[in-house]
Amino acid sequence: MWPIVAAGFLLAHGLIHVSYVTKPPAAEPGAPAWPFHLDDSWGLSYLHVPRRVQRRSGVVLTAAVVACFAVAALVLAVGSPAWQPVAAVAALLSFVQLVVWFHPWLSLGLILDAAILAVAWGVWSLHSLPGA
Image 1: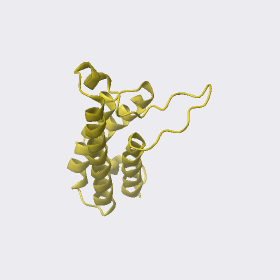
Image 2: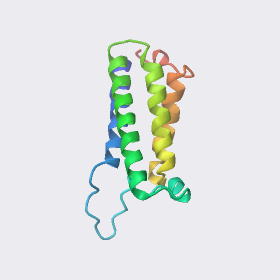
Image 3: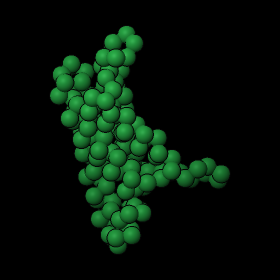
């Protein structure tokens, strides 16, 4: 049961990154700002990387994150331990994206990536959970 739940979680965490490449919702008065922006990275701007290059590199990184999380979820769902290195790569790529295009709202994503890394590296085990 837990591997299927965990696979769904990996897939959902990967798919949230699609928000970086979708059109943000219309701004409304008093509403919070959309946190997913690829054309304004604090780190890349500091290095004077042109905005179009920031965006293009962010799109490529987004595709890699989504693909890696999808593959990790599929491999976990079929019960293969090969999901662990793929999930670790996905979490590392996600972590890089969230740091390079940081917004305070995305801090939870950094925590989730750290937890995924801990499970993928064997610090925690899905088999130790109740009902596993």
